[in-house]
Length: 101
Figure 1: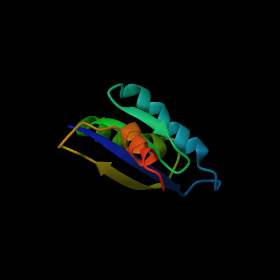
Figure 2: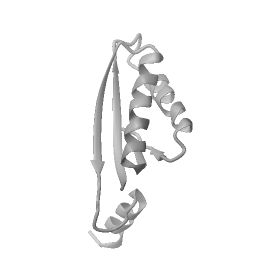
Figure 3: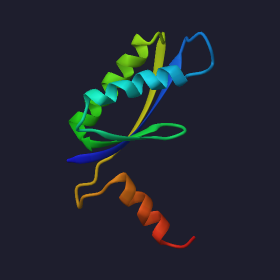
Figure 4: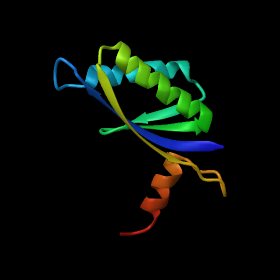
C-alpha cells in the first residue's frame, strides 16, 4: 500500500547551528529511490510511495546525514497509511482547501 510520510531530521553534534548542509545530504540520496516522490517543506520532507520504499528512503537519508558528519541524529517520522481508498499529499491539501473555514 502507498503511504504518505513526513520526516524531520535533527542533526546533533554539528559544528554550527545551521543544518541545511545535512538536509541537502539527506535529500541527495532520494535520487536513488525513484519509487518515492517527495516535497521539501520548511520543517520536514513529505515522502510518498509504497511503505517499504519510503522506509528504505528514510533509512538512506538518515545514513547520509551521519556520513555528512553529524554525530547524532534525531528523527521524527509520521506515516499516514490509508487502506479504504487511494490518496496523496495533494489530495489531503485539496480536501482541506475545498471547504471554507
